[in-house]
Amino acid sequence: MSREPNDPIEDLVRRQLEALGEDPARDGLRRTPGRVAKALRFLTQGYGQDPLDLLNDALFDVSYDEMVLVKDIDFFSLCEHHMLPFFGRAHVAYIPNGKIVGLSKIPRLVEMFSRRLQVQERLTTEIAEILESVLRPKGVGVVVEAIHLCMKMRGVEQQNAFAVTSSMRGEFSTDSKTRSEFIELIRQRKESFA
Image 1: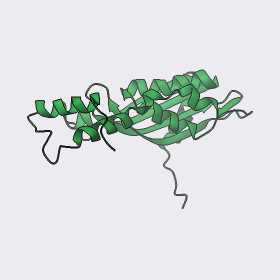
Image 2: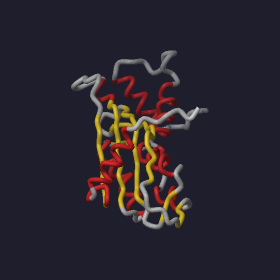
Image 3: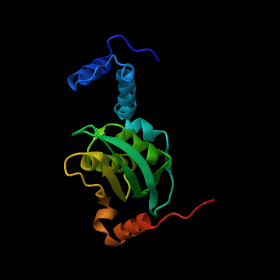
Image 4: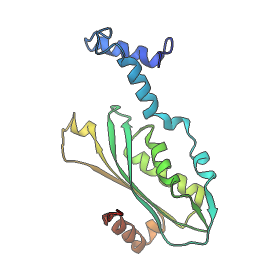
């Protein structure tokens, strides 16, 4: 793929390499600005996606009123403070109130929000807010577990630390039994389907 003329991200990466004392024209770095620009556009493609467009074509009227849980959704994101990766798993549940969403849309929603510069706390609440807004369910629960390279590679340099955030709404917030069931289902390890 040829470089766009005057690609601003490539120009910034070239200047960054020079500021670090590198020669962007040397063999190993010559194509790096283009690669970084392409990677950044991929890693932040969530800005170009609308969560309502993502969900609205997969809403169905169904009289199911038990918990729907999609767990162990892998995600990768960039921390907005250092632009270093953080990654982990999201667990998303809701209790329908006459309307459900196609199951595949939940991981797509997690991916869309994670493909933006993020903090884990906002990622967690954005997922919960959009499901609450679109589905109007009896409750929504989101738990996100993540490893942050900004904590491993720099700063406190904690190799085993990970962060857990949650957003509990409706019955997940007011009913301890519902919340406990959600947490217990997350903890259960999946059995092999093979």
